[in-house]
Length: 394
Ligand SMILES: *Cc1c(COP(=O)(O)O)cnc(C)c1O
Image: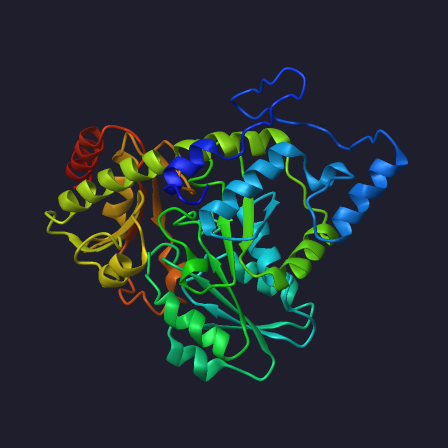
C-alpha cells in the first residue's frame, strides 16, 4: 500500500475482509464490540496462543482488541512509518506508556521544557515515588548534553512544543539520543503522523493524542503509541498489558472514521489559521505570533525542512493589560472558551502564563498569551469575529 500517498492509503486501509461464502464485505469496518473470543477447538486456541507468543496479532481475550482495533493500529503504523501501534484510553496514557515502558528505579529521564504540562504531573505524582528522576531542559543538544547522566535512559520531546509551538531540531536531538544510547520518545499530537513524522526524523517512539486531529470531531479521547523499532515492542506491549489499557471498539470506530478525513480537515484548518495570522499581524497590539507556518516564526525554516504541512493551532501575545485580553476572549462569539484542539470547532484559551515560566522559549514574562484553534468554520466569519471582539474589548 505504501507506494501510494498517505491520503490515498487512509481511504483504503482497515477495510473489513470479504466473507468467504458470499464474497461481500461492508465498506465501513464495523465496531466489533466483544469482551472475549471463543474458539472452534482447543487446537485453534493453541494456534492463537503460539502466534501471540511469537509476537503475532492473534486475539485470545477482548483486551487485545478485535478487527476494528487492528485496523486502527495498522492505520497508525502507516501514518507514522512504524512497525507496531498500541491504543490507549487518552493522549496522557500514551505519554505515560511511552515513558514508563523504558525506565526503572534509579533511572533518569531528560524532558524538553516545552512539553505538554501534565508530563510534570506524571513526574511529581508517579515517577518520583518510583525513584525515577527527571530533568527539564531547554530543548537543545547543548542543554541536554549538560544534563546527561550515566543513568539517563529516555529523551522525551515534543515538536512543535505545547502552547508556543516551538519547533525542535528533531534530527539533531534524536541523533544525540542515539549517540548516548537513550530511547527518544516524541509527542506527535501536532503532526498526528500526517504533517510531521518523528520516527522518520530519528525518534524511536511517537505518541499521539488521537483525541485531537485523528478524532477531529471532539467526541472521544484516545492515545496511540507507535514505534519503528522491533526491539522496543516487547517492553511497550508488556507495559501496555500490565497497565490494563483497553479502548472501546466504538471509540476505535470513530477514530477510523475521523482519520479518513484528517488530511482535508488539517489542510483547511491550516489554510484558515494562516489567514488569521495575516489579520493578527496587522493589529498594532499583537506582539508576536507563534505558528511555525508563519514566515516570521523563528521555527519557520526548521518547519519548512521537517514538516509536511501545518494545522489550525496558533498562539499570539498581546501588548495590552491582561484585563483587555480577557474582555477580548469574552467577546468572541464563534470561538468556544475551552481546552483542547483538533476538532471541527474553533476554540480559544487565555493561557495562564504562570504555566509558561518553565519554558525557556517564553521570554515575554507579563504579556498575555492567547491560543486559538481554528476549526472548520468559514475563515472570513472567524476573522470578522476576532475583529469585532477586539474592538469591543477596548
Ligand atoms: C491534548 C494533548 C495531550 C493529551 O491528550 P488527552 O487525550 O487529552 O489525554 C498530549 N499531548 C498534547 C500535545 C496534547 O495537546
